[in-house]
Image 1: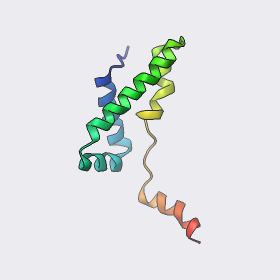
Image 2 (image 1 turned 180 degrees about the vertical axis):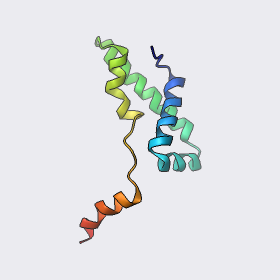
Image 3 (image 1 turned 45 degrees about the horizontal axis):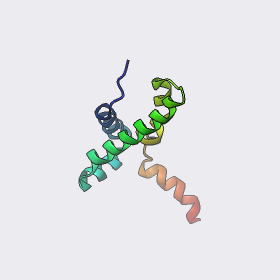
Length: 91
């Protein structure tokens, strides 16, 4: 069973973001805030999970419900994808 600790979730956030949000990670690294932002995401995830487990939800289900809010963010759009979204606006 996974132990959802702040340290575990901080490391998980950095791994996930590095794979799925490399531009965001590069920007936060340049700004020197990657670790701080990952820790904040972990803390907020744990707060949300606690609220759900206090309502009787299992820890695993609470994780499944909250992970996409702070940690398991969607894949970044590539510049090409963004250009295709902006093009109709410019016409």
